Image 1 (cartoon, helix red, strand yellow):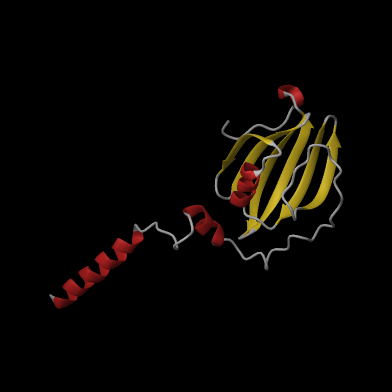
Image 2 (tube, rainbow, N blue to C red):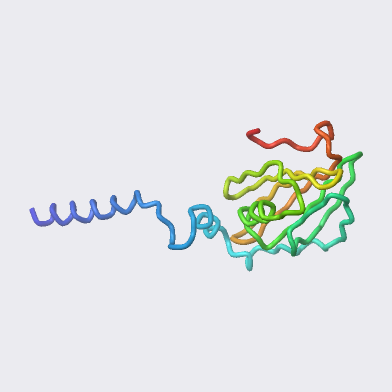
Length: 155
C-alpha cells in the first residue's frame, strides 16, 4: 500500500508541474521561447560581406548589417541581420517618432512591420536566427497601395 501511495504522490507532483506556463521573473512568454533557440555565438550572423545600402525610405535598426540590395522596378529588397530579437525589432519601430507605423505584428519568432517615411513605404519581416539574432528582409517602394509591397500573412 505504501508503494502505491508513494507512486501516487510522485505522479501528482509531476503532473502538477506539467501545466505550469510561468516564465522566469521579469520576462514574458515570448522572450522565454526565444531563449530556447541556439546561442548566437554558435550561429554566424556575419558570414556574408556587409555592403552599403543607399535606399531612400530604408529604415533599419542601429547595428543592422546589410548583405544584399536588389532593385526590381520601383521596389528595392534589402537583406540584413541584426543582434536583436524579432520582438525587439518590432519594439524598435513602435518607439520611433520619425516614421509612421502603419501596421505591426509578431508571432514571437517572426515580426512584420509596415512603415511610411516621406514619399516611401517599407515592409519589413524579421525572423529569429538564434536567441538574440534576427534576419531582416525589407521591401521599400513608393508610398502607394499599388506599389506591390508584400502583404501581411494573416492580413
